[in-house]
Image (tube, rainbow, N blue to C red; front, side, top):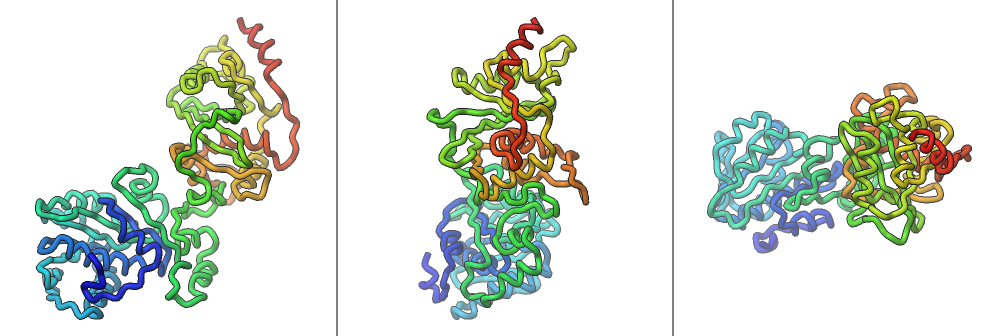
Length: 425
């Protein structure tokens, strides 16, 4: 359906055009302030009302105040400018369009009140501010048997790692599509608008409210240079032409390992292993099941030289278990300082060091760990209360060993472990 055929003059920004082209059943336009989100949503609602001629649809905002202050005025402005006649019934908050379609305007602050009607489509403005319960109720309503296109869309500014981030980014569902938009892309804004926002919000929140990125809103992210846009890559897999390494954080529940290759100036996390209630023997079995005859160098937590996750006093150390399973083990004499490890990783993330970091989009735990690991308030101590830090700790042992900010004393454990293993048996 062409907007021009309705008499609507609409000069789409690139992100808006991509949003309207998408045929995904569930799609989200996620952008910074002033990136054209609300207008994109209103135009999409009008288009769906034509595609589903004569059938009901619904436009939703987090509160009635937001509905009346922003969403509804933008919708009516588009119709008025195009000279499209309509009937607005304030008592029922329903809009009747000349092609027979009804658009219901509702608030999401009481999800139970959204139950009932069978709809052809739903649009949610500022969707990151509505609850998951409201989203689940609304998508259950998209079921009208005569609909030409059943669809739900969201336009919103990102608001941290909430349910919308999980549904549209982390889970990577086939029928879900996310379109990102930056405030800077809107050529119709005053030239200083975006920079004023950066100055007002600071660098971290500006990534959210200007660049339209999902970021951890808590001040004190350990790896604040990390972003999915720069560091996550689809289709990144193990390449037989390059050596394979394994970074390990010995933690019984869960135990974490990242499979890493260095190639073409990149540190590539190509695979990951997360095993709950486990030990080093099971980790080795899992990794060897995937990479059976491939030489692998392990970069574990140096405490594994004496630590035992096998559970019995007479069991060999974690380092010895790795060696028994054919891994070459490399580690420092003692654990590097948190500051040295974090600085080494952040330098790689920022691209200012000898390599840059990229992560396979399939490595969800690694991505989550880089996004959510935080400092304790006011301290140079990593907050371990949520268990977000294990995978970045593992990766940090590899990067700090191979790409240190300060040249450390390094120890090759392979020969030592062969002697130690013989003593164990």
